[in-house]
Amino acid sequence: MKLLMTGNEAIARGAYEAGVKFASAYPGTPSTEILENVAIYKENIVAEWATNEKVALEAAIGGSIAGARTMASMKHVGVNVAADPLFTFSYIGVNGGMVLITADEPGMHSSQNEQDNRNYAKFAKIAMFEPSTSQEAKDMFKEAFEISEKYDTPVLFRVTTRLCHSKGIVECSDRVEVPIKEYIKNPQKNLTVPAHARVRRVDIEERMKKLLDYSNNTHLNNYEMNDTKIGIVASGICYTYAKEVFKDDASYMKLGFTNPMPIDKIKEFASKVDEIYVIEENDPFIEEQLKANNIKCHGKDIFPSYGEMTPDVIRKALFGKTNDTIEYNKELVVNRPPGLCSGCPHRGFFYELGKRKNVMVTGDIGCYTLGFAPPYNAMDTTICMGASLSSAHGAQKVFNMKENNKMRVVGVLGDSTFFHTGINSLLDVVYNKGNSISVILDNRITGMTGHQQNPGTGYTLQGDVTSEVNIEELVKACGVKHIRTINPNNLSQVKETLDWAFNLEEPSVIITRWPCALKKFSKQDIEEFNNPFISKCSVDTDKCIGCRICMKTGCPAISFKSKEKLVCIDKNQCVGCEVCSQVCPKDAISKEGI
Image 1: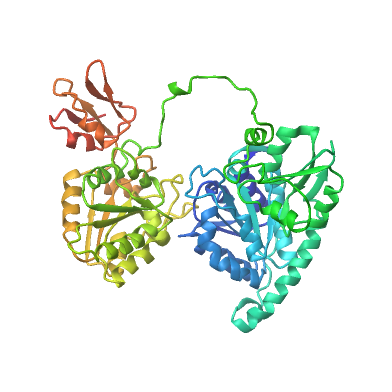
Image 2 (image 1 turned 30 degrees about the vertical axis):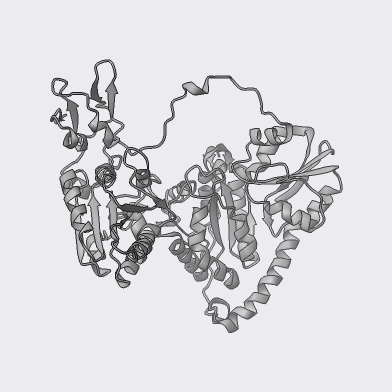
């Protein structure tokens, strides 16, 4: 059977065919669809959204020690969160095979940095695979479990955005059921007190020697001889980029298993070509190892150290030009920055918060990060998941050191982010007697990554009804005394609640609770919010004076007609949140049923 699949779908298929029993992840672009597609195989694989990446990897580790083939998937920055268990699990090794997928993002399409996670494999001393096509993603993922079990190692499976989201034909096979291995108590292997870990440290070096031999002999690392003037060394998607540029005018050393690096095989290839070019995105991971082994090559002296190494980037770096394209007047292209959707429950909150003076707003990772942009201008920092509340605490502590301080700090994060790492941050605020203002934007789903369930939605990834965490009760349990839950579409309520919080000298938490406008509503949503978004707003042109104050709410459904000097509302976009009607000074906007 052949199917058209993205790299993410192919990895999920590989998990199914490899006999994986348990999979866990935290959603993050470009990795999100991996676990969503694993979840389809409900009869064979238990797939779960974890509260964060560390928890996801730890759950997969537990399943591996218990004897099953397991996997965890996450985006590149998620591996930072999961690094603690990863490094120790490298010492322990596996029982059932365990593969960790890192979806890196050269070019930062939806990420706060573009770190190169190939370094994690070298740092943690574990095996690493780098597929270059959807077919390879499926096939290599299956082989990764074989290597994991044969060499007693966790495996890092490194992919990038282009592979994750581009499609290719994949030939599928049947699932091979792999029995769960017997669990045998073995504290010397699985319990890393120093006396045990010192012994395992020696074992790791022996493992790396065996993996090096495998790397130099595996079919995953191979070369193709064409014109011998130029030799290209590349891994992953960069190999396909290079093939598109050079075609048969170069020879290729294709690397699919990249830690340890197959130096002997690369030396053999190097002896057959006149000049070597290492084509890789971000860090000179391959280049540095070649040079350390006296293999002369060009790399970052020619190619950029950041961004995607697309065919045009390669052409520009080597030949000074790109392929001819259709010329057009770039000045006529309208800039379309991302913005909050029509009816987004974050709009009313940021509209009011952005009007405050002497305020620092520490933001987080989610749709609400767009609160930084005009017309709100209501966010000053974004660091990483969960950092908003803890960095707000630190900033407020420092501002309070100043005499006659008037600066207040508001930390803002979403419901899923609060469950991810915000709880620890809030505990820090309370324990250390802070007085920053913490805001949890509960839109009833994990919004930015495509509406994944979380502990606050009442459903699991595979559709089972489960306990729904009450955020307000959880905040109380953290020791917060001052808590308010509000409707963020009610501007007067938002304003009054901000006034209340700004006048407190103790930690406070504001919970804005309203569902994402794009969410598929659950039964609970329909009951609690009275079947929202079933009406529209319209403009009374006799009352409208064209002041455009309503446009300052930033709603994409509202536009200004220059000729008539009036605003209008696109009913195809409007969901009747009524934020615009509350700011209109002439009551020209009203709600109408449909």
